[in-house]
Length: 236
Image 1 (cartoon, helix red, strand yellow):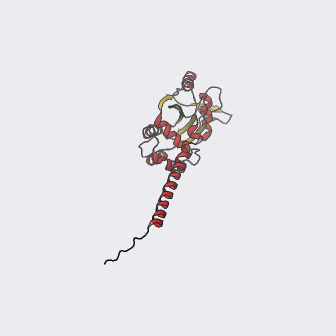
Image 2 (tube, rainbow, N blue to C red):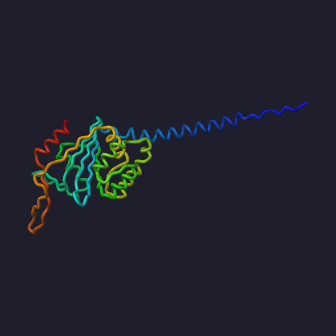
Image 3 (cartoon, one colour):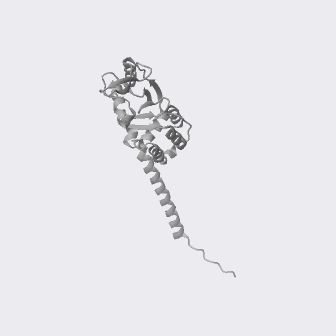
């Protein structure tokens, strides 16, 4: 006669194991939902207009790039020369303005953004940010084109803070946020884009004397009809 060994009861241990697995899955799903929903439901992502102004610190040809994004799948890119201004205005796109240049551009174009961001782009920042994004670009236009092709990817929810940190390492005065760069990537990737380059009255900056000490300032006056054409295009 052989002895029959009683089967071990694994019920309680197995139940605890299943419970732990379920809790881990639920916690993981909750974490993912918290991160994803935090970006998707942000005020920036819901905003009708989110504007960006990039100052390109090129030694050869510095420019300002105004990017206007919308919720209706339309993005506009307006290019301004450095020292741009309009007649009878005290506002000038001078690099010393920093983020205040956004207000000048918006006042000339008759626009306003629910959120507005400013970044000083240097060649080093373009290289660093392009590397983080996994794209190739050597100037703001190439970066915008590359971001449009790339779009916003799933793992970007966890990378956007790193993208912004890279920007602020090279431009400590930048007011760009993680939500702001998420909106830019998503809207560039999901929208059509029109580019406008404003014309000026002169090819090179005018030197205007101010005061009595012989001091001069540089000015590039925008052509009124060119500015009006762009204003109408953005208003449509």
